[in-house]
Image (cartoon, rainbow, N blue to C red; front, top):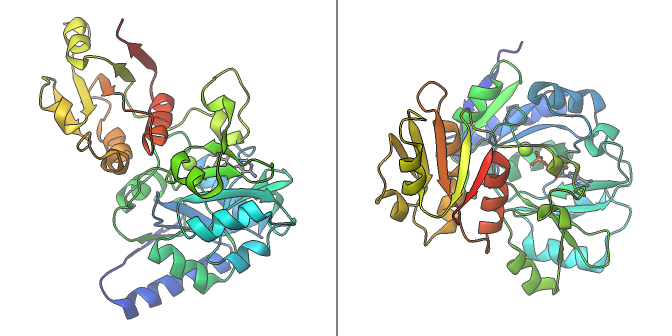
Length: 342
Ligand code: AMP
Ligand code: MG
C-alpha cells in the first residue's frame, strides 16, 4: 500500500515546474506516477527498469503478455530505442508527433523486456500534452505508460478516475484536469512496407492516408475470429459496472420492449437522440455533429453508471468515419450485446 501523492497543477508555471520535477524524481527512482496526456491519463515508470515496469502491471492487474508504450519527448530520444527508422516512419513522426499516434518499430533492446512483452518490436509515442512533455523532458528517460486504470475498466480521462482506481497502489498522480482527445492513441505498425493500423485512435485513418498514401488496417479489428497483431486488442476492455447494449436503430423501441423486465435503464446518446428519449438516466455525449466531443465524453459516461443505480445501459451507434472508428471500436468492446434493428 502507498500513500499516493497527488499534485494539483495550476496556472502558475514556476509552481508546476517544481511539482513536475518532484514527479520526475519519483519516476527516476523507480516509482510509478500517473500523469495527463492529450488522450487519457497514463501510468508511468522508467522503461529501462524491469522492477519499476513490473509495478505498473501489478497496480493495474494487467496481463503480462500485453506490451506497454514507451513515451519520449523528442525524435532523438525515440531513435535511441529503435534499430532502424524507415523513411515512411520518419515521415509519420515529422507530421504527427507530438500527438496521439504510437509507432510500432524494431526494438534495439534498450527498454526492459516486460515493456515489449518479449516482442522484437516496441511501441513508442511522443505525447503532445504540455504536462507530459515537461515531465518527459525533466526525466530524460523513456517512460513506459499504459492507461492509468484497473485493467478492463474504461480508461481515465480525469485525475478523479485515476484516483478511484489506483489510489494506494501508485506513488504519485499529477492532476492536470480533463484530457482532450478522450480515446487512446492510434497504434500503427511501421515494420511492414505498408503501415498497418493495429488500434484506431486519436489520429484517424483518413489523416494518415493524406500524408503517406494507403495504409492497411489489421483485419482482426473487423473480424473477431482473427488474431490481433496488437496483443492488447484481444482483451475485453472498457467494461462499465453495468451491462451495456449497443443499439443500431431506435433506442426507444428497445426501452419499450424491455417493459417490466429490466427495472432501471440508463442511456448514453448524442444530444439530438437523447432529447427524444424517455429513460431513468440519460447522459448526453455531445452533438452528433462533433464526434470529437463524443470521444472526449465517452469514458466518463461509461464510469458514471453505477451498479445498484442502473440495471442496463443502452448506447446508440456512431458512423465509423474519422474518430468514429475509435469510438465504435471501444463501444463494441465495452458492450455485452450488439442489437441491430431488422
Ligand atoms: P494501452 O497502453 O493500454 O493503451 O495499450 C497499448 C496498446 O498498444 C495495446 O493494445 C498493446 O498491445 C499495443 N502495443 C504496444 N506495444 C506493441 C508492440 N510492440 N506491438 C504490437 N502492439 C503493441
Ligand atoms: Mg489501456
